[in-house]
Length: 197
Image 1 (spheres, rainbow, N blue to C red):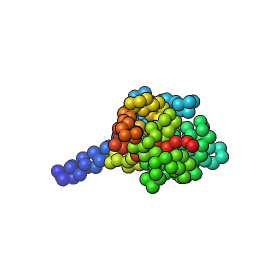
Image 2: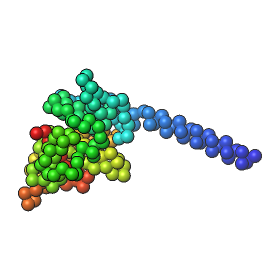
Image 3: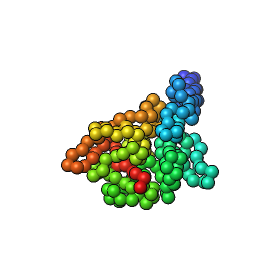
């Protein structure tokens, strides 16, 4: 009898845990924003709230069929920005954020998959406003991250980003170092930056 009671109790706990987890996963974890709310903008292109980094919506495409990306991931924002603001279409319309950086491309050369100039994070040219900054994947996010540089000073850069996490900000600063005529964003996850030719 005691064994049956324990089994029934365990089943109740497992079932209720599953329903609680499911409802939390499908609800907005933020007290103010919900999925799809506008949280920021750059040159009239909106940054939308996504909630958890792993959350995705349907695929966003343009009227002419160009793949922007999954709503509202970081890739979707930068590709939408480049399409709307620069009228730029990337030849390779797929890939995770970290895949935007091609390790085989030398500093200052053309990244043909994105049709953008690529600079490594220890470059002769410092990031400038409008560049895409690419971060590598890590244990909590194997897909990496991509954002847009929105301001540059002698000592730091500011980026605007979509899908940084539940409570993270759409804009953050990163330290910029220059030594021996080379520029480095002082963040070990930064692979480099891409720039429209």
